Length: 247
Image (cartoon, rainbow, N blue to C red):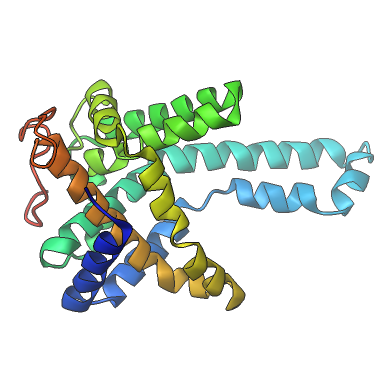
């Protein structure tokens, strides 16, 4: 059974052994490349002048078209660029815990030969969570934690089928969802402190958080192979490990 303190201690050891600044740069680049353009649309629609412009028959169609265009671009960007980069970030942090990693691992998915499979699986992941959220908020949250390990599974094996990725993640998170939620909540103090530091401080906490989640996935891998629970539900061909020399 894992504990928050155990995972965090492992994360600190990784950062001490292999350095902090490369993981820091990895999180910054991932944030920039996966930032939704819909945020721009939100800024526009939240502007007090937005309503007044909508009442203008001349400019209202232009403004609405611009917002819709930005949202469409956001969807395309997130699907084909943002999600693969996020999976690549997981690859980076899983490799980094072993021997240090290079920043180009963020783009691992693009040269893996399984780019479209990753895009499809990540799209289905977000679609599933969205549809469950339409029922009620709680089912959506539960499903988000049930599928929490899918991006890591894709980072380890970008060619795995979508169905199998969801199945393995479901088994990994069985009985673990609240603990994963609690792990995320345990970073609240750090995030709050970073937010108070003009918001910039959050950027410096992110490498520690992502390194901790990498340690969490390692525990989930051990569970998948029956190391900690005695019930094996994944094969080494499905979860082949993380090696920097892989494409």
